[in-house]
Amino acid sequence: MSKPYVFITRKISEEVLTPLKQIADVQMWNSESEAVPREVLLNEGKKADALLTMLSDSVDEELLENAPNLKVVANLAVGYDNINLEAAAQNEVIVCNTPDVLTETTADLTFGLMLSAARRLTEAHHFVKEGQWKSWSPYLLAGTDVHHKTIGIVGMGSIGTAVARRAKGFGMEILYHNRSRHSVTENELGAVYKSFGELLEGSDFVVCLTPLTEDTKHLFDADAFKRMKSSAIFINVGRGQVVDEEALIYALEHKEIAGAGLDVFYKEPIGADHPLLQFPQVVSLPHIGSASVETRTTMMELCRDNIIAVLEGKKAKTVVGGK
Ligand code: GLV
Ligand code: GLV
Image (cartoon, rainbow, N blue to C red; front, side, top):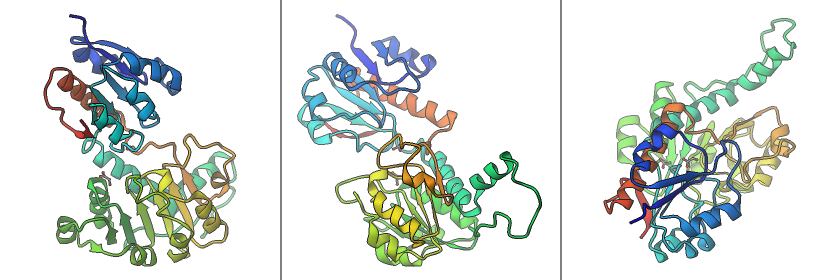
């Protein structure tokens, strides 16, 4: 019997793959910097028993309908809005993600982005590097405090909870909005549940961690930005499409909010000439929420283990849907 065939859509560590290679033929798209072309992905899908995919790959109906051997898609992310779960179920494909292992790492990044935007760290960094530091002055690159302010977390999953724990350490008031109440966060961290509108009106930092679904698309629209304090800073480490970017640009231009820290964008990668990147008060990152070497390695191992489990007829550890 021939071994199952596994295709990986990005170059990942050979070391991680060793156990998988013992039971399967493994090929990968051999680039660290370039996404697999659509045609290549579709062709590989026709042959593969398993795919290890990135959040930038569209695992849609077309791919899933034309993948007769495919049993599992392991996505290297906690989010899986790039995968059509309905089509996966119809085609009896199991879909796995990488929750939990990236929670603390992503919370660190979220907090770092909030601190950077509030205290103007990237502006200050460029200021020094560009030789503009000629004298010290009291309000030189003065930002706004984070400690003892109010954070409003939209999407209180495990990452939101980990951000709330950090916020408590900074003496912050914690508001949150979520589909369901979180008694642990309320009892242990003193987080207060608010309607979306109340959260927007009461927060100094509005932090978006919600996944992208039909319900959350464009959740942050013109009205949402108008309801925020003019001193508020908006942080997005969820998904770009949860935000109406035109509305965000308008809000920044018209000083409806004071700034933003963005790890995710409507269209990724965002072009350097994009209007959002022209604001000094916007800190922009290339979707690196979970990008520590330790965590990315653990995520790859989890994807690998999920694929091995399914190929061996066992239960995968972190299934989000599909068959
Ligand atoms: C990253 O955005 C993820 O979903 O893991
Ligand atoms: C995000 O909020 C998560 O923890 O899944």
